Structures are given as C-alpha cells and as structure tokens.
Length: 342
Ligand code: AVJ
Image 1 (tube, rainbow, N blue to C red):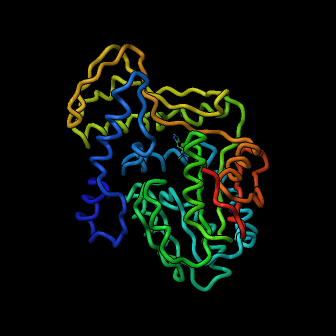
Image 2 (spheres, rainbow, N blue to C red):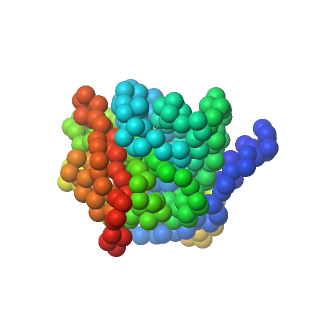
C-alpha cells in the first residue's frame, strides 16, 4: 500500500480488506532511484509512474483522442467477450494483472456471469487507490466476489499459489509492452509456473503501426502524457525527499523502430544538479540529458506468438479490431507441458 492511498482511506472510510503483498514502497522507491539514476544512462522502472496520481493520470490518458489503445481493446472485448469467455472454457476465477480501475474487465466479467452462477475476480495492481476504484465500480455485479491484491509482478506473484479453481488470467491494455523482451519472457514464465494445466491467459498487445500514429498517442496535444511522465519526479520528491524542479524537465517521445518500441524520456532543460534526499547524493544533468522512464513495445503477431511459446503457453486464438491496431490473444497452459526453459 502506498502512503498516499493509506491517507485516502483513512479520511474517507475504513480501509478495505485488501491483501497487500507490496511491502516497503518507500524503500523500493529509494532503491529504484539509487539503481536508476546513479549511472550514465539514467532510467527509472515504469512501475514508479503508477502511484495514486499517476494511475489517475493514466486513466485520463485512456480517454485522449490520440490514445487509441484502450478504446480499441474495449471495442474488441465489446464485440467478442462471449466468444472469448467460451473459448477460455468459462472459468469461475478471473485474475487480472495490472487491473487498474478494471473498466474494460467489466465486459469480460459480465459475459462470464451470463454463464457462471458465481465468479471470483482478483484484480492485482501496484496502486491500491486504483483497486479501490475498481472495487466500487464492480459492486453492481451481485454474484461477483472481488478480492483485490496489491502486488508488483513478477516479484510478488506468490499469492497465485493459493488454491484456485480453473483460472483465466487477464493481462490487458498492452501492459506487457512495458517490459523489454527478456523481462517479458521472465514475467510470463513466472505467471506460467503459478498456473495449472488448462488455465488460460488472455493477453492484450498493441500492434506495430506507423510512427505517425504511435507518437501522438504518447505525446498528446493536451499534454496529459507529459504530466503523467513528469509525475514520476513528483513522486520521487515526495517518497525520498528529492529536490527535482519539475518545470526544468521536458517530456520527450521517440519511436524506436529497430527495437519496436515507443520510448518516454524526461530531458533536462539546461545543466542542473538535483539532491536525491534519503538516497544521500546529488546528481548532475548535462543540458538535454535524459532519464528513460518508460518503454512501450509494439508487437507483430510473430513477436507475441514467440513470446508465449517461449514462456510455455500454447497460443490458441487471436482477436483483432478491423484496423488490426490491437490484438487480444488467448493462450493456455498445455496439459502435459515441460517446465518452460529458463
Ligand atoms: C499502461 C503500459 C499500456 O504503454 O501505452 C501510456 C502506458 N504511458 N501513455 C502504454 C502509457 C504513456 C501504457 N501501458
């Protein structure tokens, strides 16, 4: 649980009985800052972007005209949820990694509740605040039990070892795109190890397309994505007492065609020094020097097929929108599968 979300709960109502496996958020932030900023090519892990404020800004991003991802994925779900649920085997338990506020998930849950008397839904997210919103949104589903878990993954997937019935694991929104290929493989293998034969995975991926469509999706006219990106510095200031001057950093977006990813940076406007609070050092920026804050990989069908197979899944089916901008892939843990290669 983050300190910010604890404050939100205590001022509004008693804290919900969330299972929080995310132990020391402030210490994790300090570790990430130390590891990421005391090096020539500065970088920060993307999970840092998703504190309560960052998650709220991301929700705003999903409604931007330029940000087609959420809308397109929702369109595919709206059209095919019944078919997807059927193909997945009508599982009574749904787990969602990076659930956020679970807005698209309602389409899946609603289709599932048409076929199942009772469904258990476990949304997993790094933001307790987002999960709190998810929980209140889902109150209208009477036969649904919601059991949120605050956790980072793949580090904190242990809760998946609990006895479950047949499961469908959702990993939507192209969240997998945040991970470079080795980390994505590692994450899906970790997920796979906690699942049982017959369990299903539904994974959403943004697909490769023209840079002229991709770049504006991450550099919107209203500057919401810029605020989302800069919020990571606000968070670091708060959590470790650093002294970043937010107005002296610029939101920079690049389409890296060779690596097939969008890259987000914060570039220093001029030379400056920044005190890193409890990390106990000062760092120096040359003019234009960048911090790499997020990557968003864009997949071809071959890339996602390879990734799933490498992680020990069998890819069963893919649904696309008409423009083929986004893909939803249904994969399964095979009945007799060798343990995925390490
Ligand atoms: C939540 C990782 C899917 O990569 O599109 C959106 C994050 N960052 N705009 C994405 C994001 C800036 C988003 N994911």
